[in-house]
Length: 392
Ligand SMILES: [Zn+2]
Image (cartoon, rainbow, N blue to C red; front, side, top):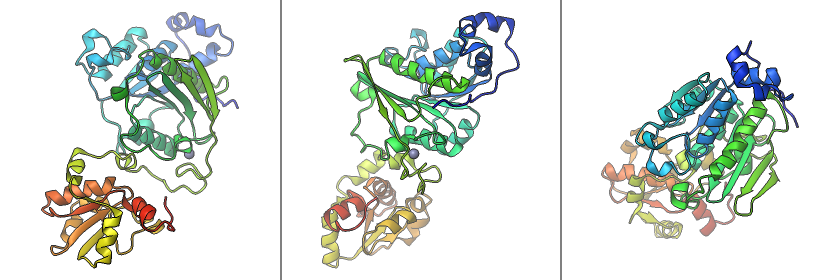
């Protein structure tokens, strides 16, 4: 499947640009038209780290006219083993500024736009809307799903890559023409199950292998040449020196790009990915009960106030008998605290125990020190108490 070019050609190349890009211009598939498209292209790199480093450098060298960089971190000495866009003298500098300087040293004709902020639900759409294509070099699941969902909702293609130790993966996700990241990975792995590069390590040069696939795909999409990596996942094993390809189909039941989507706008990605704050972890210590304990209390007619802190749509799918629905947001806004009984033991639950732990921290700090939450949430309840009920 070949796709039309993403970008219209710029009006012209200057004499200097013709000299600079001559080795592109003499490739028939690229030529003057392709190079003019690159000049007109706006590409956003999410992260100027392991994957962002080679990606930004080659996109700059290739003559992509506008490069956006989303990055809020500073350069650390331990980054230099793989993040080759930064150097010794950049330690403690803003990564975004360091990356910009390197890009301009490679190619002064690139217009670099810095977004020195953490990508979140409030800024992602506005930032993405300014670009033709997104290149995702993030290393955490919450941002990965955020990037995917924003790209799908805005109809933007994005080139994804991931690296760990000696293994890498890359694909192009573009819901209009193929699957999205959620079609491949509908659920985030349980928090703490997948170690990050900081925890598990990564062979530095692996970044170049995967980053170069990402840039290759970006150039192909921008200029409309070749077979894009849409609907295919590249899997690279550096130790075996093997590239494998796996077909990825669009999932008709995908929560985001499927026929009956349940995710129609950006969500709480930290909660979706089971990222538990330190406050929530502390609150949960000694204040977590099992679904069986909850059942026991209900059977013993204990005076408890059971609160489901999920969203109404989730409550409709499955709920625990006797639970009152008060979504997490109402606790964070403070509205729900007035409705808390003083004479009953408060028991919170959510889907798996992440959101309820967050609310637990709020309740504890508001003085409801004997409030508890159900570890495993409604999923744990169904598994242990009511296996006939649906899960989601
Ligand atoms: Zn999908």
